[in-house]
Image (cartoon, rainbow, N blue to C red; front, side, top):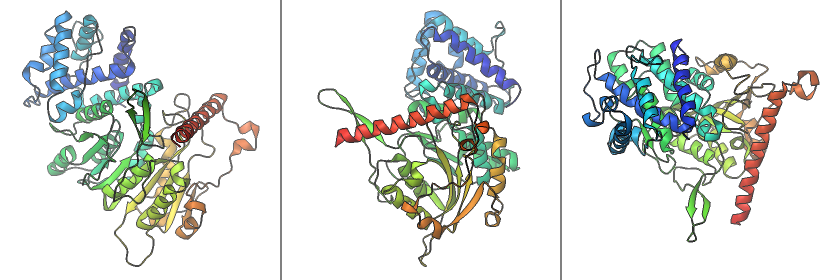
Length: 494
């Protein structure tokens, strides 16, 4: 992150503490910042050296906010949000269902001046002339701050940036390859891939245009998150008047899109469900199963459904990296069916076992599965010859604050992955290969394989710090509670 970005993030975030007294949550604050920052940045695009035509109606643009104060400002801001939410394209995505959560006109005016760079304000932020990457970093920093507020639930949409960076580094996107994410959250994979492409290639004008307008496409079911993602991409110079992010459930059907690369971290939790209301008004949760001809198995396990959906929207010879929880590796029934089909019809070549303590959603034991989609075979052989497993979980202890995951922690995995030629990999203590015949003979074709000894079980001196142990206990309890609640729901239905 650039030198100036953290200071600006802190300045913007500190103002949230003032608004908290008025009942404005962290999530609401980020939404208001998103609305105002978008209008400010769009206004900058109309000035030198850009001189672009504004796509925001004149009567609702940034200057109409800076010219008002008091009750007039608060009333006008509400009208701005209401009217822009009805626009098409990117405007409609950014402002969809937006509401003013800052009821005090004086504090709303203070925030607008803070963003505008009012010369009379000692805390002003001078956006003009700031590099576009810095603006994007500032917004990323705000999203991470919001994810840290676990109670808001925003954390489940925020994948650790160090993990994303490593996944992009081994996938190695190329110019003019299309990249999709059916559960894009705040767009971390898109931004990291965009950075990789701009830093590793000297793009010609045609490739730059493709990168800006045609490379990325994402979906998310949560309106607020779609807004955050669209805004983040806009600040990084990705996209134009049309949004590349779609608000909706990507699992409902095959959209017809096909991508060269899929990188995704579907939301945690095993079951797909929706809230319904009985005639008496009682709220109940109804489990969803997706009946799709392109799926190998019908199940309410949304992780298995995302895995099946991804194989559909991936081009032949396309590359995928997807975060999956442990249950996808060993669950029977539909899980076994999907694993058999994956090993047969895809080249499932790599599995990264992730440590606990790196996700904002607690109780998560997850992995990253890397596979390539292959054409149909007529010789009856499976496409997966070897699955290489890298154990980055055993004897690894991370927390979200004291001992955080950094990109350097994944350097050895990236080296072992050997993107230049995965056929010339070498085994290490942490990196082992398992043949298709070995995998298919395992009980339920379980891919939940580990071989390293847990040092902490043998020597008390090797126990991790107390706070790390406490975090792991908390995560295990949360995971167990989730399983119990799921069992209670199932028993109630039966």
